[in-house]
Image (cartoon, rainbow, N blue to C red; front, side):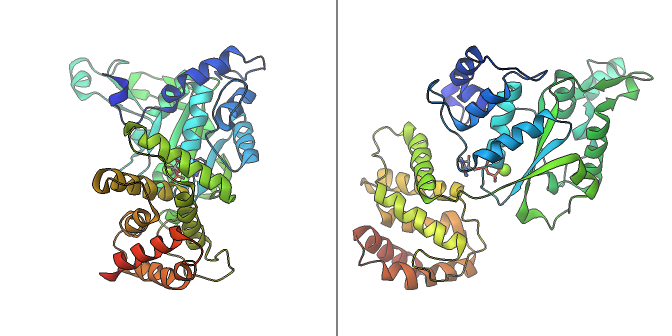
Length: 365
Ligand SMILES: Nc1ncnc2c1ncn2[C@@H]1O[C@H](COP(=O)(O)OP(=O)(O)O)[C@@H](O)[C@H]1O
Ligand SMILES: [Mg+2]
């Protein structure tokens, strides 16, 4: 299989050359079981211009340091925050840098059972030869313990409380016993093992995390990017990356990114640059969603319009990409357009085109 055919490679493959350079130049101490020193892990996530290592997570350097320190300790690391704040990305980057492997993932959902955290069986082999190492199907957590790697638990709060409880005993005992293989048979965690969980604040209601689980993890809250210029740079760069497979499409104008990011920030925070208050939608107005809108707009402009991406393409994509078909949100967006975007028409062409296209798009509602 040609790697370029895979839609998204794991971080250790996407940035394999960076990891090699970091490793070759790593003169600092490494905790047992780690592929890189904590400093090199930080460079991988936050960038190092001397080694030509790109910055991948933006906006909160001290958070990254705290996460790395936490993973050296006894407790797991739990990243919580709004959807689209790069919790999964950060967990992927940390496990790629620390273990060279970001694939030991359990995706939390109501369907996850305790066995998914421990082990299962290949039933054909189990029937043929009885319980054996060969018939055992290790969970990502068991593999991480055995190999001294970081396991990732995505959306842990979506799992049933019993499953969360099972996680507690795994984290406190750092052992998985496998009685089927014989008395006393177990897998003990080797150095380098730890767990990174992620949880979306919006799911909280689903299954509140137990206090025991909370004690087993260090919690870090990931905030949306606070700095406007950071956010603009990130959106521009990520759209450019996604559009790399369409090399003839032109890059996004700064002005287009500027309008998009302004709209997202106004609606996310509920306060505009001018200090006016606007109703915030239920939909997630994250940087990740802004990238999705810009990407859709760029594809629309290039393939359907044969034109350069403009703010009118952005306006046309916001409803479908962000508000889906939530009529309440569409109403909130309409009042934003009527009150805020309209008043900005006199600023420049980018805003007046945005206003006109949004108005037209919302007209059918
Ligand atoms: N602070 C940030 N630094 C880098 N990328 C970010 C940041 N915030 C959002 N993103 C973008 O948002 C995308 C989605 O993030 P993801 O990890 O799926 O979010 P979450 O798991 O928090 O819902 C990331 O892959 C990245 O493109
Ligand atoms: Mg996620």
